Image 1 (spheres, rainbow, N blue to C red):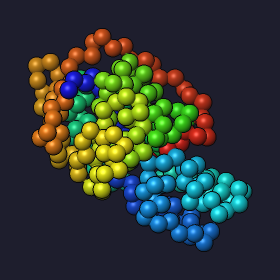
Image 2 (cartoon, helix red, strand yellow; image 1 turned 90 degrees about the horizontal axis):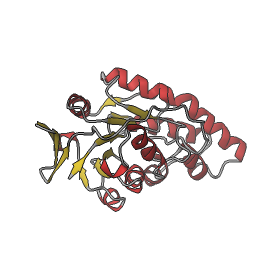
Image 3 (spheres, rainbow, N blue to C red; image 1 turned 90 degrees about the vertical axis):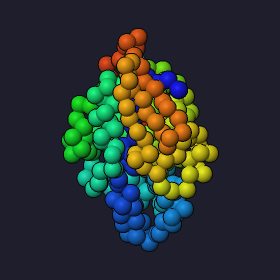
Length: 250
């Protein structure tokens, strides 16, 4: 298959924040006498907008208390701890070095995304970033991926996306992109969401240059080629109005 750009999710793809996210939500739940099951984490926390998590998992609370929980999440989110996902940063460097247009599409705040990129040594590697509040709807709606593709000046159908949650996969495929899911969890929900491939880690994704661009081989099953994007004109990002519905938690 031929592609023109790559869009990366951040949490769960470039950095591992699962434990920090679990600690944050479990801590808030315990303060109100609630517990969050593994099933609820999978369905209503990972890959979901915080508003969705509050309205579903914290539904027993009165509206003023739910608003307090959401405020606490907004205050704590920029400082969430993370660890690098093995070989993810190397792939970003390889693709950027080959001239492949890249975008970071994350539900993290701009402050946390900037902190992660500095820590990973990836500052300046992405042609554009889409962060918390820049799209009207959060995943699984496709808005954030459509915005990233538009900013790169690349049709969504020519974009390859790396995601890790079913909601993120659904967002990418709804935008018209091809998605590779990176996860060691049950692949069935990811495939059901439209993932073309599900791999346990970036060890299963190999990179090589060729005369006209680059090739990614995914799980030794398919070569994804990236050629010239000279015909595409990147769009300069503009400041978007923050909308309460556009804050994915991963």
